[in-house]
Amino acid sequence: MLTLNQVAYRWPDAAADCLHAISLELRDGEWLALTGDNGAGKSTLLRIMAGLLSPTSGSVTLNGEPIAQLKNRQRAAAIGVLFQEAENQIFHSNVAQEVAFGLKLQRLSAEEISRRTQAALRLCQLTDVAEAHPLDLHAAP
Image: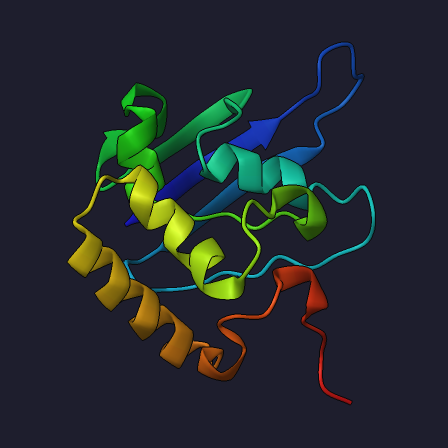
């Protein structure tokens, strides 16, 4: 479980916090989408939740452990983040390889990577576009 308790953030040299007293719990298997106006703090909050940025005050824990004390590999195994500039985050030439990328970083066996990749493609209804380039995907009308 990812827990934020009274998290606030203030950018260096800023006069005021951009995030104020945010508390939430995100349980294993849950997904979260943040929406809001430009400059509302969505990306800042995601970076704090992923342990990429430390809050000015408050705490962030992953399964009861302070997220800042976890190794990158531990965080990566539990938390995935997709930022709004997806084209800057594409590393492979097809959807299946892109889905498998994070699993390879966890040094799982080839069989486990294949199993999890196929399961994720089915879950997201992407099996029919598994060999397509990720930037060629688009929303249906």
